[in-house]
Amino acid sequence: MILMGTGYQISYAGGGWTQPKGSGYFKLSQFAIIADQYFTPSGDIVDITTTGIYNTGIYAEYGFTDRFTAILNFPFFSRATLNRKETMDGTLVEEGDHLNSVGDTDLTLKYGLLQNSGVVLSASLTLGLPLGEQSGGRTGLLQTGDGEFNQMLLVEASRSFYPAPIYASALVGFNHRTNNFSNEIRYGLEVGYNPGKFFANLRFYGVNPIKNDSQEVVAVNGIFNNNVEYLSISPEIGYQVTDKFGASASVGGAFFAKNILAAPTLILGVFMKL
Picture 1 (tube, rainbow, N blue to C red):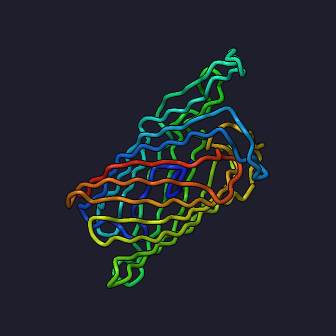
Picture 2: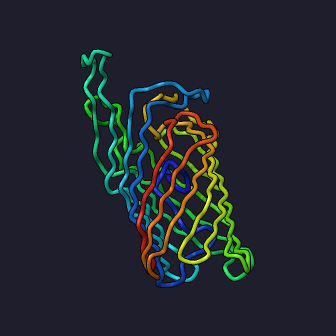
Picture 3: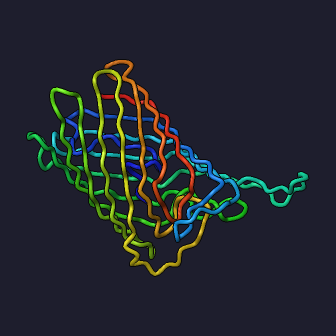
């Protein structure tokens, strides 16, 4: 599962710009979602046993040349939980469950098509590595990954507006998924404001499955299903403490969704610029 630019994952920072040669952006983030409701395949919301997903991860961008940037999104610790069930009088119905592992990891190579014009344009190839667990815990219901290797082609365009410190970015991409998962169309829009040490942005991100799969949808209590569909909104604020170090916080939610947890997400992070 390629996790980028949405409330359901760690974070990303590039837009259409690439990193200059020898420069980089590195972020340590904590992602969390705790849900007692779920978006069904029809988009309805139903109650479920409370489940949680927590990812501690590293996001890194590094410019090998002025046009080629390598990107890593690596959840080095991923935890999925399922609450215990009790009756109203406290009688145990079912024990809780948990799963700890690494998470699915994304490797990206971005190339700057246009970098010295009013609108910058880049293209990237992302490989989604299935390092997480597809089925684990005592119940076998918990996941820290979807078990499939996927490849996404993405085009991003960005523009800065002067003299105001405002920028806008847009993206569109195609995600090819293996293991009988549906391919996906990805799209997004971001607007940001960066007057100095303080910055803020607002991201919209959408996923639309093509539904070319041969695998039935299984309503697993997580974010790793087949035929996941959503349009999310994720505001973020941050503060650059020094020229190199800063911190940020983001919250995300969905306007509509299918086959995914129905709850807001929270991402806290600290970053360093090289």
